Amino acid sequence: RPPAHTAFRPRTASAATMSHMMQPPVILLREGTDTSQGIGQLVSNINACQAVAEVIRTTLGPCGMDKLIHAEGKSTISNDGAELMNLLDIVHPAAKTLCDIAQSQDVEVGDGTTTVVLIAAQFLRNAKQFVEDGMHPMIIVRGYRNAMHFALKTIRSLATKIDDDAEKQRQLLERCAMTSLNSKLIRGHKEFFSKMVVDAVVSLGDDMSLRHVGIKKVVGGGVTESFLVRGVAFKKTFSYAGFEQMQKQFTNPKILALNVELELKSEKENAEVRIEDPSQYQSIVDAEWKIIYGKLEQCVASGAQIVLSRLPIGDLATQYFADRGLFCAGRVATEDLERVSRATGAKIQTSVNGIIPSVLGTCGNFVEQQIGSERFNVFTDCTDARTSTLILRGGADQFLEESHRSVWDALNVVKRCIQNNEIVAGGGAIEMEVSKALREYARTIPGKEQLIINAYAKSLEIIPQQLCDNAGFDSTDVLNALRKKHHGPGGEHFGVDIDNDGICNTFEKFVWEPAASKINSYASATEAATQVLCVDETVRNPQSEGAPRGGRGRGRAPPGGGLSAAMGGRGMSGMMGRGVRKYQGKGGR
Image (cartoon, rainbow, N blue to C red):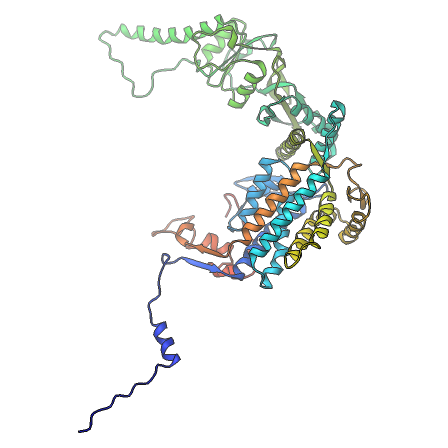
């Protein structure tokens, strides 16, 4: 028989493809983990950041609107960017970046929180077109960072030094405080509050720690009834019987500050005392009384006329001190006791044994006075008065809370002006001048980076544009007038004229801002934008989002419910869409 011949046929492309598809996939992540990457995911992150900016866009400037946030059964009315970003419990991971830079701006400078969020969102908006056209994100990042360094250099060159003359320096500080208060709820009384704010900051001396400035709120009365105490004031603490018999006013008193409990208390729980004779029980009771009386006698023997303690001072001690012409207050808040110690020189003691005169403090006058419906303990004419207290009055709790935030921002602005000693023109003037300088700088840069720097320059114009929109002006006409003015000689200080629907020299109108505020805003906004642009993939594990592990329970989120809903309602695939604008109030559902 002829030998059998075997025919060999080459594998076709389809056969090779089928063989490849039949290979088992390599699993790197846990089951249920969802991933998203590419241009669609990056665009979705940009859209989410823009949605955050849309929430607080209308709060910018003197004509900005307020927002009412209801969370955890409490209503908050505010136009402070950091406060709003804190109250809005944003669940989108990329959008949280804007919350971080708002909080950073608030801690570092104290003002400009809305500005930094709007600029960061505008950077991303203008970068979005480049991303959709296929430009690599790292080219955009390099261009933005190059533009940022040039912008910061320009701000420093435009900044004006504060005059060393004491009177001129004070006027400048008051005007910076008024600029900060211009966009707040109490802007109608900015001259009134600016003087108090400057006095409070100057009283701190070289330390400049704002935690030594107390801000107390008293409901009732008009806002102009607010006043500054050049010393320490705090609300009357809880008191026992015998408090009415105490002397409420002293001149040059000695002050003893304690962290000691002056109260007769029984033994702790589970304490056991064994006695052989019932008559011995009285000796135990007498020992307890002897201990408390010993402490009180040592306080009186120290020569102090005012005794303050962070811990309770009981009814026995209250009556004991009242009989001997002393004033006492227990349960004093820690921050108030520290400010009393700083102002009067009293050293806080943890024991009443061995009290020496050097640990006692003193002040010129002490009085307990009525302010509204509250009683306040007020220490004035202090020897080391490196602290002060602002008493704010108002008709409603929401008004007082917003006044507190407004004054706090102004305090931070004045502090930064003193520390950095440089100011720039506000009202969008510095943004327009830096934008003009960046456009001129872009002409010297070849390649794609020129487009990126021009986009950076255009993004800065969002500040004067939004100031116009919030005031009801035609932003197109105003911006055109500003561009024309800034491209001519002597126009570097021209910004939006909120009073007359046009442009004006904001530096001559005393609309001033600390240069440190603008430098921090541009740097933080640029870093936030580049951080979002550098993210090319997002990985989500539903189990890490609070998915139930079994059983029924109320209040548990469905698998992937929290973050997935924020990304479009389809897990990470939702990030491939237009982005999301969903916010969840704290504690709300």
